[in-house]
Image 1 (cartoon, rainbow, N blue to C red):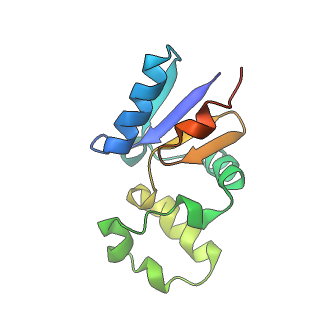
Image 2: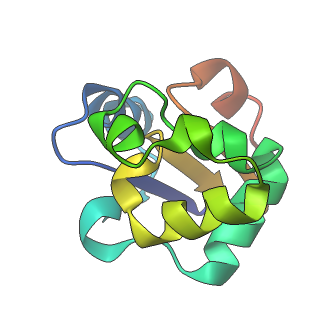
Length: 114
């Protein structure tokens, strides 16, 4: 498995995801999404795997409210804001090749095979 965890340093869900894989002795690549962001190719792959841009947004974040994301109508406008401000991402985003999840989802991670 080639696990990447895109998360925020102060996110408890991200820490839980990292601990989940560490306890199972699965190596992960932890990426601070606020610092490094996500490349366009990674973003497209994750978006396709999770079902669209809305699944990647965190409506509970202060950045979501500050960016007036409730008023954004088109997916293109949402994507532009999301790529400009990584704080809008719901974390953790766990990626294994072409598979990906948003949030703490051990029930899905268990089904991932090498």
